[in-house]
Length: 239
Image (tube, rainbow, N blue to C red):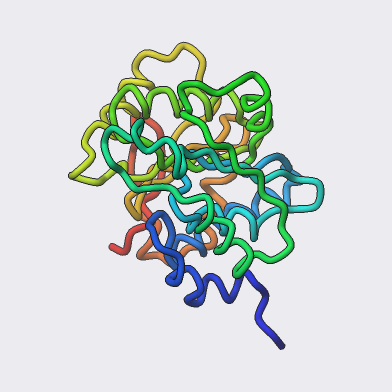
């Protein structure tokens, strides 16, 4: 039986897209989360802040269901002067080329903007997100802003994935996550998993069920029980 576009991307297609954010194991993790959401009829937009050349956005496009939106926000080519920490250099041309190769026919909306300065219409594109990947700027204020955007936009049953949480070169990412949880009075999503350089937050309505689902699908050496910010979770790195 021929491989699906998602299987081809998981089995090596992603490596032809310059960038970071996903590899074969992460594609498998995202796919399990997607399976949980599909099984539980959780629908909504699939969004990313910090697209670079589209390695993760292409995966989101491949997970898109009928009637759903895929939205990528990036400074892209014309606004790299605002990329103060030089964390990647987004290229709209490269993103479109990679989407055409690996997710042909999938409609993806690209927003060229600073996530601090989204218009009302651009905010609207993110609303009702079921899967939201944060991989934009790595300064404290930027990450705090992007977490707040994702929490506000999240649909019931949605998941937020924050990249570079464990990256020693970007310590302000972890600081921002901790500060947000210490100061926010309204949390829609809380940690349920960590690993592969990311922390994963699930909507409070589905967090426990998703944690159980991931635990049932991952091998025993990739579901070590841990606590993250006071919440029960699992670590999906091999142990």
